[in-house]
Every structure is written in C-alpha cells, then in structure tokens.
Length: 144
View 1 (cartoon, rainbow, N blue to C red):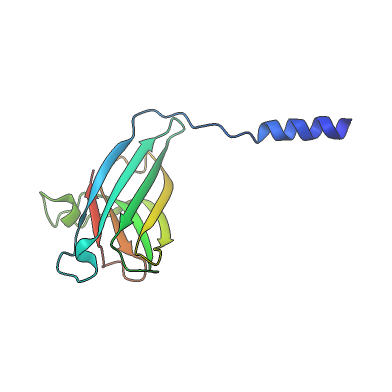
View 2 (cartoon, helix red, strand yellow):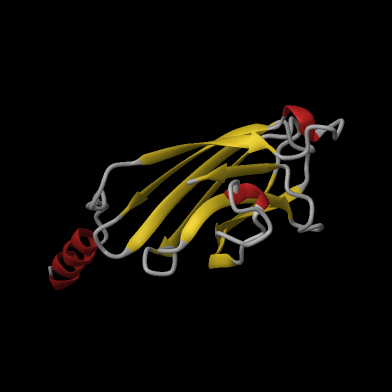
C-alpha cells in the first residue's frame, strides 16, 4: 500500500502544465540574406517568441529553402555598427547564446526551438540562422 501511495505522489509531481506567459507571442519573418546564392536565394522562414513569467524566452524558428541534411544554428544579436539602418547587416554581437542547433531535413527544412533568459536578450535587435560549419554563411535574418 505504501508503494502505491508513493507512486501516486511521484506521478502527480510529474504532471505537465502549460507555462504562464507574461506577454503575447511575437512573430518575425526572415529575409533571405544571400539572394545571389543558387541554394539560398529562395530560403524563407518565420520566428515566434514569447516571454514566460519565469524569466525565459521561448523561441521557435521555422525555415525552408536551406541546404539538405546540413547543420544550422541560430542566435539573437544586438545592433552592431556596420550598418545603422538594417539590423541584419549591422554585424552585432551575439546575446543570450545559441538558440538551438539542428540539421535540416532532406528537403532543406528545419525547426529550431530554444529557451534563453529574457534578461540576456534585452538588447537583442535581430535573429539569424547560420550554417554551423561556416558561421559566416547566414542565409536568413529577421529584425525584431
């Protein structure tokens, strides 16, 4: 009997509940950053992020038109100084670390999901997706 009660108590601790959010979901549309590249000129994507009450931001990025079976990663960046008008061309520093790393499927599509602290992202001005093996190759970017 004691084992049954203990099992029920543990099971109730593992129940899944939806996180509380402190704001509404925000959406961004990625723009192709390599329009002259044969593969990346048709790349597209969207991003959604929401700040949770615990101090984390949940981010989900969906992209297509990428290289098949290739590893990608995404970052938030602050505004840089290379371009004062277009955050995606400003070359700002990474903030909040890597959102996620994922390999695209055979059709060049992927979904990246991650959590970062909202405090670490307070200066974020854009999100971009890089090839993991070549960080200088940035097929997609979205200003916030």
